[in-house]
Image: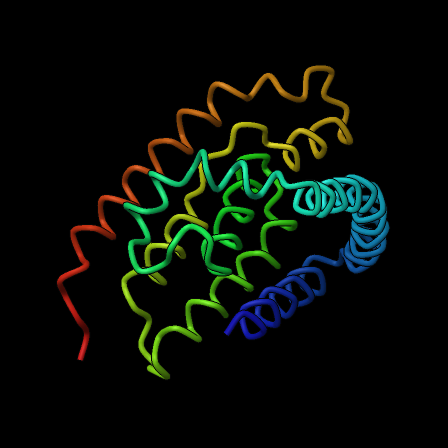
Length: 193
């Protein structure tokens, strides 16, 4: 579906450029955009590698166990099917930690590992259980204490105070998380099909 949307946008752009005689400007914009995208990716790569490596070191150093203990009461209420020492709970905890630090890209592999563990314990069912749905909501509407990615992006584009958005990020992510968790809890009893 997304490929069709992109193809339609490109086709409309080319048609508009042809109709207005601005093919030269379109070509320049495409080349400039491609160059900016490469610069952005190279700039972000260092930050993502550093934080992903720090998360691996934190996991090997026992930070996961500490965070599992701290987050244990909350995780037990949200995910009662998984004991705190289970591989699923550990992956969920690391995903939450990465999201708290604003590292969505670093959280993705841990989120996939958590879903794989939860799917293995779902008795071969093709339908997501309540814990899987709750995890998707928690991962999608995560609370971010330090929006690392956004701060780096703002700094790269010239912001002198890239983290001045912290209060707004805290409020918005807390509201989104509360709304998502409430909706997931309210919908637990309903099944589709």
